[in-house]
Length: 281
Image (cartoon, rainbow, N blue to C red):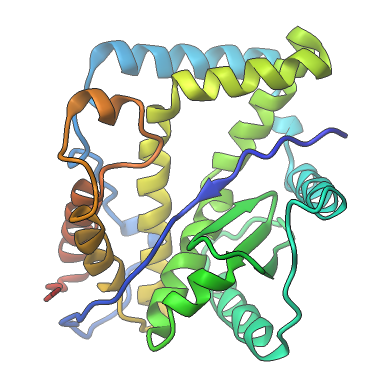
């Protein structure tokens, strides 16, 4: 199996304060996931909605959705990990203390899922100076720089890892594997790589909804574990200060929402579903 390095990344994180309202924890089926906060150029434009629908139909007709089982996703994750290590793309860090902490956070989050998948999850610490976290096929990677950024905010670590779990549990990785199979099927394994990456470049903004859905999912799990769910809101507000000024043209080509939009979406989600007002700096 040839596995390409398509990674669902979260990016840098920071810190916040949160005003929590105690009460009975909502079931995930009762959550209201709204995407109206994203720019209409991405989510509301009729052409984009039609392109997304057409893409789903073609993908599902060419590669049966039922064939991408949890076991298949796990298999792709194993192949991805093996290839990354053999090519020295990733360098793992053997820090027992940190690895134990990451394992605990992941296990806590997995235990908080409702209707969990059978995907086998493994988490790794990478020797990498970029502040990042990403996932593929149940393999979750947190860079040392990202971990250092989270020192003093365990809740932030829960949000990061919960986001990555969300990509798998919400079926984003499954669709990616379908598209990988489709590109190989049409263009052959060698040319399939090129087609797959070109397609992702041209339609990257369609992943913004997935990123926000993963944000919501990670936030919901963190809330069930009594973590500070406002940490990510503060981070995205801080990140917005370092970004280009918002423009619809740039937004169309972004795979992740603008940080200012992301912060507002999360803040609205937390207020709407948990009755929690985030008091961020």
